[in-house]
Image: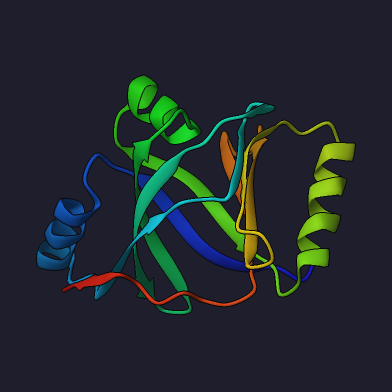
Length: 154
């Protein structure tokens, strides 16, 4: 596997507020804040449109991500309803789309549950699998290019 640890994600109600609080209390930042609107998206095998807001800050060679659902049904909404704010997933990033697809196929072959996915046409793809051994989700991510954040906090 030619993946790198991209980020650890925490689902929250308000990314801007939480980013400001973490910037002030722990010195984490600056945070790049963006709204994500996948072109295609599925939740538990159903085509379901959704959008979400993220804030990302670099910590060493990795990143910390805050994520808040905006519209539609998603595993983020499920998490907030069932568990409240807190740790949600770890993300592995792949240098090519083919490598993401190979890992996705292997996890599916192993019988892992694909719980959510989203795509940006030729610009990228992400998907989440249940990983029972971790008791959490694993996100697979490939981005053709990095889009600059809409705003910055901290």
